[in-house]
Image (cartoon, rainbow, N blue to C red; front, side, top):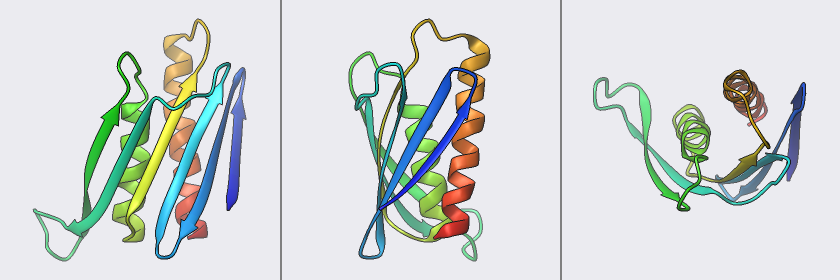
Length: 121
């Protein structure tokens, strides 16, 4: 298992990547109250617009009232398509009194963490 950690201001995100055979199981959490807010499964497949490219089909299970689905879907879908692996992501990030700018920062930090995983796997 590999841990990837990134921080900016009061935002700290942790991404734990656990290879399971050829697949990846990833836990993303952070903020003031880490939790499980969403689970995704992404399966690589040929792109519908270009059969020479790999895309993914992503399924999402979101806990009622949680908004972790966009973050989990981005990570899961991107890694499955880029690495040609089945990817499961659990995600739960909660920052008390989060601002719009901090939400944007979380999105950017997750992109950076995803790029790190792609370069390592």
